[in-house]
Length: 445
Image 1: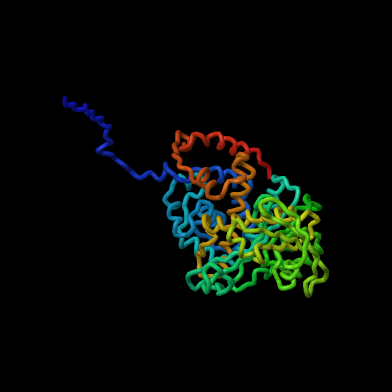
Image 2: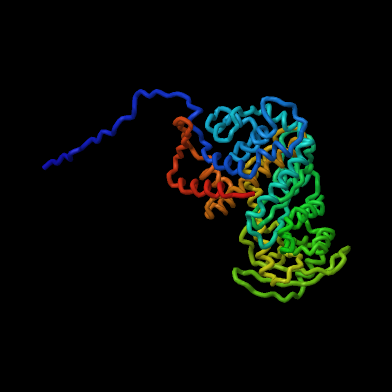
């Protein structure tokens, strides 16, 4: 008996065959979250500070100084890494409406502003940034200050002024800049930095930078513990002695010189810990140092991360890392405290990959330096907004995720008389918006 199965065809509904469309830059935006930032910037007086604190001798044009500086900040915040990409904001009417930048300048105008004003802009911008940080510091609870030092290489691919061939492990022989940076590790705020040519030594200018960092601690926080963490590029007797003289508690990776290697190869009393980690300590006075210092040894059977081999010494079947410190803690706790510095190293990688830290906007050294300080002002403004105004779960959100979830949010603007209404695409974030707006409205700085 032959059996023929019955076959049913399900007809799917067809999409529209004809569809009219039109450009509505005055209604749609992919940056709906900038309204929250705009409200925050207004409350902390950012635009007012640009107008009152920046005296650049800028010739009056279509744009004020405050508008031009904000027009440089927003693309950094929104992930537009090159000035030419700001054309996306020039054609976005809702973005301009939400930020109060009714006529957004083009890339040429922004680049000329940087080049012409940079020598005056840099010191004034730094002073304004410090004043803003001091005002907002009261909003963040601090039990201590942890200053994490680092440097980074910014590779260039042209003939930018001041770019030189120097330390550049990723692109050997390529010209670069080599900024020196310091972040406050408790809240991961940018605290101080110097833009330097690529040939600058890692530790060059560190004492001046540390002096500036300590001077920026608000008077209300004087007396709180101060810590410093740094990698082996900052292993220098002048830095170590200065930190000790200033009563700063420090942990610095030691360079594994021949005398230290001989000590590691000799008899040391190790304490065994989990995961194949052992710790020991010894006192040692390197040549030229004023006094003996405490050195902590971490011995591991095999690093979990292959990159750690770059800072560890292999002897027999172990890898070693040595830290110089004045902390009275047990060696394992010293090591764990130092390892928290990895958050800042990760942050710098994020700033390169997801913000504009790796992009050099002009061929002039001073203008590129100004852009660096604008970038870190933009970063701190977003960080303060994240910590002070958003729900607690956003406090540790990475930069890119924060941008995706909050700042770069599709939105639709409608107006009914004098009452604008912004429609956002994610109903689940409506409560977060209400929370943020309530926090902003109660903010007093």
